[in-house]
Image 1 (cartoon, rainbow, N blue to C red):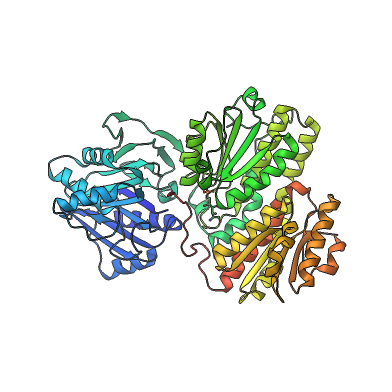
Image 2 (tube, rainbow, N blue to C red):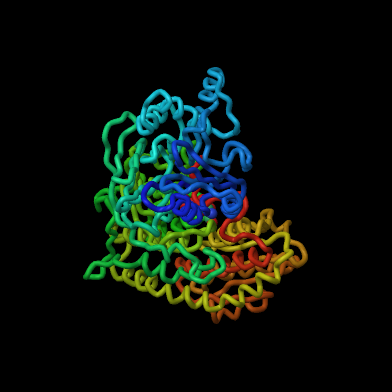
Length: 614
Ligand code: AGP
């Protein structure tokens, strides 16, 4: 939530900041703003709505030329998404400008104290108080770095803050607690961003910051300290993707581009996972084989699409490793007082690595002595940093708010984890593991086969403009696919969409079925005859009540033909791996339907890519 950019160097700060905000806009798009230091004061513009509104405001009322500044794109928490609540916020005299991502939990208290002292706030945000507090410090003679350290010590909650002082043309100061911030290291210039996309055009050298740290960037360098003012160090790393990876590549939406990148993303996530002898290896697995053998329960925690990846993982891990697996929404996890100990492995799945609910859940798990393994797509993010082990997915940057390649690569990581545990615990023979690895390695081609039939799905999607409700049915590993298909449609097309386990339908949801209701059915491969046949019974039940059945079934499955109003074929793959191909038509369906309805697919209303508030 909220994208933040800071810059100091020799270029036009306005251009660098606006370019950075464009690439971070997926994080929030309720408003955008920019502030620059110019001749002893701060000059800024801010505007409700998307970045385009800010750019228009600047073109009508240009800002002065400056080489130091900051910017923000907002996902509203405190206060309506209007011009006044847009960031940057200014101190009482307009000397300091601040942008913020996160929530300052004790802001009511701090605001009341400031108001008692005669300060007047103009916005409803929790951020404005920080601008006042910083300005009090710099007005009393402190430099902005010391001011930031002092103020942060008084703040509770989660925050990334970036500030400039109109009377200091040489430094941008930032702080982070439980909220993302990375530094981009340049020559004679330095950058700050919520993620590396903000500055990838200019540098691929980055510095990861720790918790409760303040960073000062100048043209000459970068200094990191703790909130107490003690010197600290960040971790330098090289970003291994470039600007083109963050651009649309000729597609209308990032989401569509990302759907079509899935064969590559899956292949990349499988790369380098085998030793010379063919055994499975996971490089970032920092847990010893003995620690893994001692595990007698696994709890998977995640949110949204990542949660559905966790549901698929349960089927794979329990089948291949014979270890019980619970899958829990990270927002619920710590509030139910879960039973955890050293023999429980907690697996946190997060594309962004910054989801606050999941982060708090792993912190809770670690206080209970459980080992935490993260499955994550974002190098340098907080969740893998705070975990005992990590399996990185290699999806590349995912910009579309709706997760697609992030999901498929999470599935790959879950399968790899399951197979690795089976290898270590000896619950599967080596040749069985090798066989599944071979099947996994064939999946990029199968995904390409599904993508080659995208036009058929697009035609179908366009027929559904005007539908008020769509249901999704699945069984076994197809059930999470049904849930994911429904989520994609909710978030992109703003339609009532629900996913059900097909067997559960008769216990209530079938009452929703009426004449013409579209029901998308994920049919399991025929290898599991009982499962397949039970699914067909479910399809018959809804069709008998007037539903329009759209069936996704493996090619050659003629048994489904009498019950399918529309049949979309999937390549023949093993039952546990079917989610990797079955979800793709559902992603295409949601993307095209939302496009036909005139919605912004990459930036759906009310959503943000990375949910860094609880
Ligand atoms: C998916 O399309 C979502 N936009 C959302 O559900 C997402 O998967 C969820 O917020 C979790 O994010 P994470 O994987 O970055 O933790």
